[in-house]
Image (cartoon, rainbow, N blue to C red):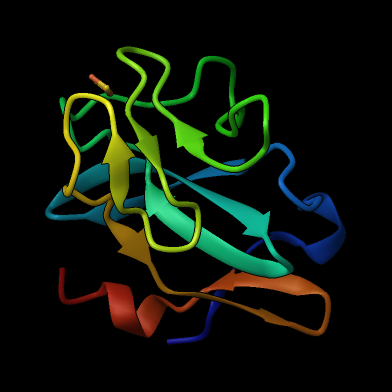
Length: 118
Ligand code: FES
């Protein structure tokens, strides 16, 4: 299965707004997001590890004011952008569900082959 293009590379500014998308995961449609951090792209299911609800306050707005962490807008759990590991708030040690993405020829792509077995 070919990769699924999620957006253009230029759509993801360093530590800027994430691009939201949906995918089938775990037998149902889920919200997800992709963002750029330290030059690389990362994608996660848009569900907090505390309570499985969407994390962004406004669509794609996930970085804290320091642009260092991804923050859940409900109770303030904060996550490392490159691993999805919760480092503080109500669920430290839990992780966001990461999704396989890569950047090719100025496009940000979901590697669909690796999402079909979930
Ligand atoms: S739902 Fe995200 S911190 Fe509680």
